[in-house]
Length: 240
Image (cartoon, rainbow, N blue to C red; front, side, top):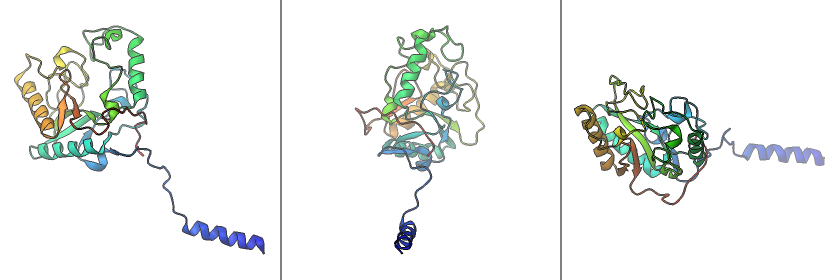
Protein backbone atom coordinates (compact mmCIF):
# COMPACT_ATOMS: atom_id res chain seq x y z
CA UNK A 1 0.00 0.00 0.00
CA UNK A 2 2.80 2.41 0.90
CA UNK A 3 4.52 1.68 -2.42
CA UNK A 4 1.31 2.40 -4.31
CA UNK A 5 0.93 5.75 -2.56
CA UNK A 6 4.52 6.67 -3.39
CA UNK A 7 3.96 5.78 -7.05
CA UNK A 8 0.83 7.92 -7.20
CA UNK A 9 2.68 10.84 -5.59
CA UNK A 10 5.54 10.51 -8.06
CA UNK A 11 3.18 10.52 -11.08
CA UNK A 12 1.37 13.57 -9.72
CA UNK A 13 4.66 15.44 -9.41
CA UNK A 14 5.67 14.57 -12.96
CA UNK A 15 2.37 15.95 -14.25
CA UNK A 16 2.82 19.35 -12.64
CA UNK A 17 6.61 19.71 -12.97
CA UNK A 18 7.61 22.20 -15.70
CA UNK A 19 9.24 20.82 -18.83
CA UNK A 20 12.69 22.41 -19.14
CA UNK A 21 14.40 22.99 -22.49
CA UNK A 22 17.15 20.56 -23.43
CA UNK A 23 19.72 23.37 -23.22
CA UNK A 24 19.26 26.21 -20.76
CA UNK A 25 20.27 29.63 -22.05
CA UNK A 26 23.82 30.28 -20.77
CA UNK A 27 23.87 34.02 -21.48
CA UNK A 28 24.27 36.19 -18.39
CA UNK A 29 21.69 38.83 -17.59
CA UNK A 30 21.85 41.78 -19.95
CA UNK A 31 23.13 39.83 -22.98
CA UNK A 32 21.23 38.73 -26.08
CA UNK A 33 21.89 37.11 -29.43
CA UNK A 34 21.74 39.72 -32.16
CA UNK A 35 19.58 37.50 -34.38
CA UNK A 36 16.81 37.72 -31.76
CA UNK A 37 16.83 41.53 -31.93
CA UNK A 38 17.85 42.32 -35.52
CA UNK A 39 17.64 39.17 -37.68
CA UNK A 40 18.23 41.06 -40.93
CA UNK A 41 21.80 42.03 -39.96
CA UNK A 42 24.22 39.76 -41.78
CA UNK A 43 26.59 37.77 -39.55
CA UNK A 44 30.06 36.67 -40.68
CA UNK A 45 31.68 35.77 -37.35
CA UNK A 46 35.28 35.22 -38.37
CA UNK A 47 36.80 33.87 -35.16
CA UNK A 48 34.48 30.86 -35.12
CA UNK A 49 36.14 29.50 -38.27
CA UNK A 50 39.42 29.62 -40.16
CA UNK A 51 38.95 32.83 -42.19
CA UNK A 52 40.81 35.05 -39.75
CA UNK A 53 44.37 36.14 -38.99
CA UNK A 54 45.03 33.06 -36.84
CA UNK A 55 43.88 30.75 -39.67
CA UNK A 56 41.98 28.68 -37.11
CA UNK A 57 39.05 28.82 -34.72
CA UNK A 58 39.69 31.02 -31.68
CA UNK A 59 39.18 29.63 -28.19
CA UNK A 60 35.72 30.50 -26.83
CA UNK A 61 33.88 30.68 -30.15
CA UNK A 62 31.72 27.56 -30.08
CA UNK A 63 29.31 28.85 -32.74
CA UNK A 64 29.44 31.67 -35.34
CA UNK A 65 26.80 33.89 -33.74
CA UNK A 66 26.85 37.51 -32.58
CA UNK A 67 26.22 38.05 -28.87
CA UNK A 68 25.91 41.59 -27.48
CA UNK A 69 24.50 43.48 -24.54
CA UNK A 70 20.84 44.25 -25.03
CA UNK A 71 21.57 47.96 -25.33
CA UNK A 72 24.19 47.44 -28.04
CA UNK A 73 21.96 45.06 -29.98
CA UNK A 74 19.05 47.49 -29.89
CA UNK A 75 21.28 50.36 -31.00
CA UNK A 76 22.66 48.27 -33.85
CA UNK A 77 19.10 47.41 -34.89
CA UNK A 78 18.43 51.14 -35.16
CA UNK A 79 21.44 51.59 -37.45
CA UNK A 80 20.25 48.69 -39.60
CA UNK A 81 16.81 50.22 -39.93
CA UNK A 82 18.31 53.55 -41.01
CA UNK A 83 20.55 52.13 -43.75
CA UNK A 84 17.99 49.58 -44.96
CA UNK A 85 16.12 52.46 -46.55
CA UNK A 86 19.13 52.86 -48.87
CA UNK A 87 19.16 49.20 -49.86
CA UNK A 88 22.06 48.43 -47.52
CA UNK A 89 22.72 46.06 -44.64
CA UNK A 90 25.18 45.81 -41.79
CA UNK A 91 27.62 42.89 -41.72
CA UNK A 92 29.09 41.99 -38.31
CA UNK A 93 32.43 40.17 -38.05
CA UNK A 94 32.83 40.10 -34.27
CA UNK A 95 30.69 41.11 -31.31
CA UNK A 96 31.16 39.97 -27.72
CA UNK A 97 34.58 38.31 -27.40
CA UNK A 98 35.30 36.04 -24.41
CA UNK A 99 38.34 36.92 -22.30
CA UNK A 100 39.71 33.45 -23.10
CA UNK A 101 39.65 34.38 -26.81
CA UNK A 102 41.63 37.55 -26.11
CA UNK A 103 44.19 35.47 -24.20
CA UNK A 104 44.31 32.95 -27.05
CA UNK A 105 45.09 35.69 -29.56
CA UNK A 106 47.79 37.14 -27.33
CA UNK A 107 49.46 33.80 -26.82
CA UNK A 108 49.34 33.11 -30.56
CA UNK A 109 51.13 36.37 -31.38
CA UNK A 110 53.87 35.63 -28.85
CA UNK A 111 54.74 32.44 -30.72
CA UNK A 112 56.24 34.71 -33.38
CA UNK A 113 56.54 34.40 -37.12
CA UNK A 114 56.96 36.40 -40.33
CA UNK A 115 54.48 38.92 -41.79
CA UNK A 116 51.34 37.51 -43.38
CA UNK A 117 50.62 39.13 -46.78
CA UNK A 118 46.87 38.85 -46.26
CA UNK A 119 46.46 39.96 -42.64
CA UNK A 120 49.57 41.84 -41.47
CA UNK A 121 51.77 42.48 -44.50
CA UNK A 122 54.19 44.99 -42.92
CA UNK A 123 54.69 43.72 -39.38
CA UNK A 124 55.96 40.49 -37.91
CA UNK A 125 53.54 38.31 -35.97
CA UNK A 126 55.48 38.74 -32.73
CA UNK A 127 55.16 42.53 -32.99
CA UNK A 128 51.36 42.68 -33.37
CA UNK A 129 50.82 43.50 -29.69
CA UNK A 130 53.63 46.06 -29.50
CA UNK A 131 52.31 47.77 -32.64
CA UNK A 132 48.81 47.95 -31.17
CA UNK A 133 47.08 45.61 -33.60
CA UNK A 134 46.28 42.91 -31.03
CA UNK A 135 45.39 43.90 -27.47
CA UNK A 136 46.22 42.28 -24.16
CA UNK A 137 42.68 43.32 -23.18
CA UNK A 138 39.73 44.04 -25.46
CA UNK A 139 36.64 46.22 -25.23
CA UNK A 140 34.85 43.36 -27.02
CA UNK A 141 34.88 41.43 -23.73
CA UNK A 142 32.56 44.05 -22.22
CA UNK A 143 29.87 43.06 -24.72
CA UNK A 144 29.08 46.40 -26.37
CA UNK A 145 31.77 46.54 -29.06
CA UNK A 146 31.19 45.35 -32.61
CA UNK A 147 33.32 44.96 -35.73
CA UNK A 148 31.07 45.88 -38.61
CA UNK A 149 30.89 46.90 -42.26
CA UNK A 150 28.16 47.68 -44.79
CA UNK A 151 27.07 45.64 -47.80
CA UNK A 152 24.36 45.95 -50.38
CA UNK A 153 21.24 44.16 -49.24
CA UNK A 154 20.88 42.48 -52.63
CA UNK A 155 24.34 40.95 -52.24
CA UNK A 156 25.64 42.29 -55.55
CA UNK A 157 28.54 44.33 -54.18
CA UNK A 158 31.64 42.14 -53.88
CA UNK A 159 35.17 43.54 -53.53
CA UNK A 160 38.43 41.67 -53.01
CA UNK A 161 40.72 43.87 -50.91
CA UNK A 162 44.40 42.97 -50.80
CA UNK A 163 44.55 42.96 -46.99
CA UNK A 164 42.18 41.58 -44.38
CA UNK A 165 39.02 39.55 -44.98
CA UNK A 166 38.85 39.30 -48.76
CA UNK A 167 35.58 37.39 -49.17
CA UNK A 168 33.12 39.35 -47.02
CA UNK A 169 31.02 40.78 -49.87
CA UNK A 170 30.95 44.31 -48.44
CA UNK A 171 31.18 47.72 -50.01
CA UNK A 172 34.69 48.95 -50.80
CA UNK A 173 36.36 50.16 -47.60
CA UNK A 174 39.90 50.21 -48.93
CA UNK A 175 40.90 47.20 -46.80
CA UNK A 176 39.10 44.20 -45.43
CA UNK A 177 38.21 43.56 -41.81
CA UNK A 178 41.26 42.83 -39.62
CA UNK A 179 43.84 44.26 -41.98
CA UNK A 180 46.58 45.09 -39.47
CA UNK A 181 48.11 47.96 -41.36
CA UNK A 182 48.09 51.79 -41.28
CA UNK A 183 45.71 51.78 -44.26
CA UNK A 184 42.98 50.55 -41.89
CA UNK A 185 43.04 53.75 -39.84
CA UNK A 186 39.61 55.31 -40.29
CA UNK A 187 40.92 58.64 -41.59
CA UNK A 188 43.82 57.17 -43.60
CA UNK A 189 44.69 59.03 -46.80
CA UNK A 190 45.02 58.57 -49.64
CA UNK A 191 42.20 56.15 -50.32
CA UNK A 192 40.06 55.82 -53.37
CA UNK A 193 37.02 58.09 -53.50
CA UNK A 194 34.61 55.17 -53.10
CA UNK A 195 36.40 53.72 -50.07
CA UNK A 196 36.61 57.15 -48.43
CA UNK A 197 32.90 57.73 -48.98
CA UNK A 198 31.98 54.31 -47.62
CA UNK A 199 34.03 54.80 -44.45
CA UNK A 200 32.31 58.13 -43.90
CA UNK A 201 28.93 56.48 -44.46
CA UNK A 202 29.66 53.76 -41.90
CA UNK A 203 31.02 56.14 -39.27
CA UNK A 204 28.10 58.55 -39.72
CA UNK A 205 25.51 55.79 -39.44
CA UNK A 206 27.14 54.28 -36.36
CA UNK A 207 27.63 57.65 -34.66
CA UNK A 208 23.96 58.46 -35.23
CA UNK A 209 23.13 55.11 -33.64
CA UNK A 210 25.08 55.86 -30.47
CA UNK A 211 28.44 54.23 -31.23
CA UNK A 212 31.96 55.68 -31.27
CA UNK A 213 34.71 54.59 -33.64
CA UNK A 214 38.22 53.40 -32.77
CA UNK A 215 40.41 55.56 -35.01
CA UNK A 216 42.91 52.82 -35.88
CA UNK A 217 40.25 50.45 -37.25
CA UNK A 218 37.49 51.68 -39.53
CA UNK A 219 35.33 48.64 -38.61
CA UNK A 220 35.56 48.89 -34.79
CA UNK A 221 32.76 50.60 -32.81
CA UNK A 222 31.77 50.70 -29.14
CA UNK A 223 28.42 51.78 -27.73
CA UNK A 224 28.92 55.22 -26.23
CA UNK A 225 26.94 54.46 -23.06
CA UNK A 226 27.85 50.80 -22.61
CA UNK A 227 26.32 49.09 -19.56
CA UNK A 228 29.39 47.12 -18.39
CA UNK A 229 32.12 49.73 -18.63
CA UNK A 230 34.39 48.16 -16.00
CA UNK A 231 33.55 44.47 -16.48
CA UNK A 232 34.94 41.80 -18.77
CA UNK A 233 33.19 38.49 -19.40
CA UNK A 234 34.42 35.04 -20.31
CA UNK A 235 31.36 32.91 -21.13
CA UNK A 236 31.66 31.14 -24.51
CA UNK A 237 29.91 32.30 -27.67
CA UNK A 238 27.19 29.72 -28.24
CA UNK A 239 23.99 29.28 -30.22
CA UNK A 240 21.88 28.22 -27.23
